Length: 505
Length: 115
Image 1 (cartoon, rainbow over the protein chains, first blue to last red):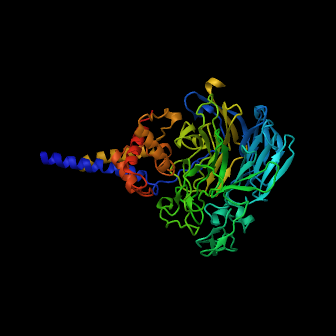
Image 2 (cartoon, one colour):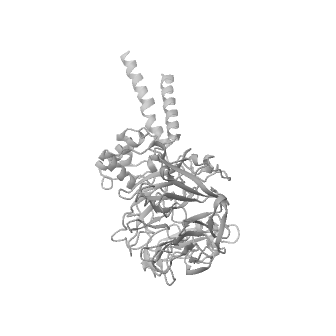
Image 3 (cartoon, rainbow over the protein chains, first blue to last red):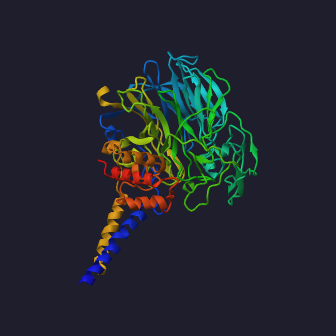
């Protein structure tokens, strides 16, 4: 009997204790489990609205104040608190339309203030109040993404009159001209994203659509750089006939153009992966900081410090990067922030950035940075696409001086595999501790409302506090599925949400 | 003997499968704010934000799997962090000192129990 008990005990241990951790680990395995991006098949194409489907901290409420917008990307307010929104006029998936600045009226009436041509996307807007100091008072300032004719910074009057303050910004690629926001010095600060994911033009850029339009386009550094001479072989998607040629492409070079070790690439301004500034009356852009990938959202904190959200690398293209988070940076004049060889202070040649079953990522620049780039203030989830940033200023809203972040949500599988949907929510960041907390999430689960068959958040792309600080307005881009063919954005599904603390409505 | 070992095995595998698939969300809007008055948990949270948050946001799944629904004991959490597994990289002592790793495990335990 004792022997039998020992055997039973051993059998139990083998049958139970060993398989439990093993099973947990196997079922958690990144390689074995299928990808479950938020936009992957299962996404509904229509849109329901039900604020009760959005969970918030105790005491907060949410309502939809406008719906039926097409690809909205930004919001701002005039002197009287009137609400204005930007419709992008372009979305990934090569969906084209006319970008618009509209005044948001009641009952989903949108009064056009200005309409652009097909050079979207319009990606951001700010209004400089009449009581502000400086020459730029009483105007809207917009970033025009410039997929066809290059990026521009536009100044638009209340009567719709439009003046280009900067033109021909290098914005034909994956990422666009973003912002702009007025700084405390009266200058306009704006971002310019990179042409590529990680410095090398490849077939992924052909899939975006822009490489066929601009075969010679590539990233331009802001300062002189020396290349390590890394080249990447890929298929040439423009080869006539069936079988595709192989070509080699180096960093900061046109598709099919190799580089050599020690090759110097001259820097110039305007450039890619940079934050620049310009006078509200126009003139040549000045460099503020560089080495970003896509500094989509810029904001000045209540204490005057300047911050940017930078979209992290994707696992795509000739130089795929794995596991690089979205970064919240404090911006300092003249600093280089690491693209294309770092994510935060860590070099991309570390194992943690190597895609499974791939070789080590090699650096593109010849000399490692000394000192390395600074540490970001906060890390946000890989592929969350952290695109909207503002700071709470009001004790009546609460979480004063916290940053609020709109997470557009993953673009898996195009941008890389994820095990569960990432993003599709509003986060807040305790700026003192760098702690990221959820603030507004879909109640039924992670992912966009269209995947959850709920009436909650879809793809939050921007947010801004009202001038009195009591309400947080969230711009929700609308439904965008992602199939094997790429992004599939859905028109007229954009929404503006308002969040407030119940006691102060 | 075979039957007696098959049953617990099946039960464990089924449980593990269900655990791996069920929601692990523990964030403030759904479960209320986490008590971080314990300095170890507060410190573990800040370390977690730098080293772990980007792949396991709020302890939930994202690029990597959920940690909130993994009832692994602390020593296994620490073992996996130190040695890596599959796609997850290993964190050396220079990058994640033992005291910090202990606090991360304490934070994860608190997070699992939140709400």
